[in-house]
Each structure stands twice: as structure tokens, then as C-alpha cells.
Image 1 (tube, helix red, strand yellow):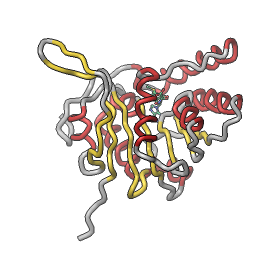
Image 2 (image 1 turned 135 degrees about the vertical axis):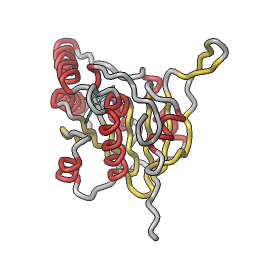
Image 3 (image 1 turned 30 degrees about the vertical axis):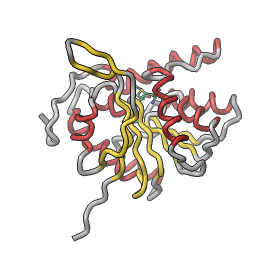
Image 4 (image 1 turned 90 degrees about the vertical axis):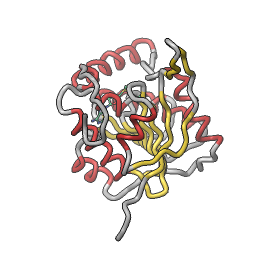
Length: 227
Ligand SMILES: C[S@@+](CC[C@H](N)C(=O)[O-])C[C@H]1O[C@@H](n2cnc3c(N)ncnc32)[C@H](O)[C@@H]1O
């Protein structure tokens, strides 16, 4: 059990940078040879549900939006198509950022991409200074960090702190996970973020219990109390 009382997940190679570098290396080759943009994690419906939620909830087009662990950047490409223009994507894999930049350039979209390790607070400050974002989006990145084979609890805690620093005081964190339940996410983020809205996702029933393949939650930033 970690500080915030959840059981850690089993480690996997999907938690390592080496895995992602190799995976995006292949995706770059596929994109160059036949224009395949590569994997959209948790399928396109998950992406569409978040975008629909943002549109339905009138998230302004001039909001500063960052996608953490953006991979090929397809979430940002779709947001750009919907009219959002202040879009940044970061990923620690140079190959992911190379692919994302190429896709955006080919579609003549102005999206800012940076190579950044989201566990490295110093690197984040060097890139962004005090800049904070209205919408912080994470689809699958917290999941990947959670299954790092070494010290996942510490890594999750560092990531959550960095998420908090990157989110503006009135900002929202939109997080999609297939490794954690809503209750586990709320427990882990407690003290930094609180549940604002749950985005409904398809459910399945097994042995009398109802579950979801993907959990999609909008969190509000919690501000520390000044005493
Ligand atoms: C499951 S993929 C999701 C990619 C993309 N968000 C999507 O939905 O298609 C996880 C992503 O997180 C990135 N990632 C994992 N740990 C990271 C870290 N410490 N800093 C930055 N990016 C990280 C990986 O390189 C990978 O692109």
C-alpha cells in the first residue's frame, strides 16, 4: 500500500521509456511508408468522449491546453479541428515528439510540441517557467507511470505533484485510465485534485459486478489552504 492507501500495480515494460522509444520508432516508419498515424490509446471513442465533454461544457477555444504524454498527438489534432488553438503536447520520447510534429506539419496545424520528462520537475520549470494550463489532459500516461518496474508509488506521487503545478488554479485535469478505477484515482489524487465530473463510459457486467474498461474523469485542482 502507498501513502494514499492503494495497492500498486504489477510492473511492466510499458512503464519504461525504452518501450515507448522503440514503439514510436516503428510508428515513425509506418507513418513515412504508408501514412498510418499509429495507435490512439484506449480507442478513438475515448478521445471523442473527452472532446464532446469539452464542447458540451463550453471550454473556451482560447484556453491553454496541454496533453501530457501526447504520443502521436492525435488528441491535439482533433482539438485543433474543433477550434482550439493554444495547444501544447509533451512526451519524454523524442520519437513520439518527432512523429507528432510531422503529423501536425503535414496537416498545417500550429501545435507546440516539446520533449519533456514529466517526472522531472526541474526540466518542467526550465520549459514552462511559471506557466500553467486551463486544461491538463492525460490519456494513458498516468497509467504508464503507474506500471514503471521501479518505485511506482514514488513516481506516481512526483507526477501528481507536477500535474498540480502545471494546472492553473481554476483549471481542470481530464484523466483517462484503463488501469485504475474512479475510486482509486480519487484516493491517489486526493489533496491535489478533487472529482468534478465523471465522463460516462461503456460498462460491462461480470459475475454480478459492473465494471468499465476505461475510466474518464474531470478533476478540479485543490488549492492548499492558507492558514
Ligand atoms: C499509453 S501511451 C498514451 C499516448 C497518448 N496519450 C494516447 O492517448 O494515444 C503513454 C504515453 O506516455 C508517455 N510517457 C510515459 N511516461 C512519461 C514521462 N515520465 N514523461 C513524459 N511522457 C511519458 C509515453 O511515451 C507514451 O507516449
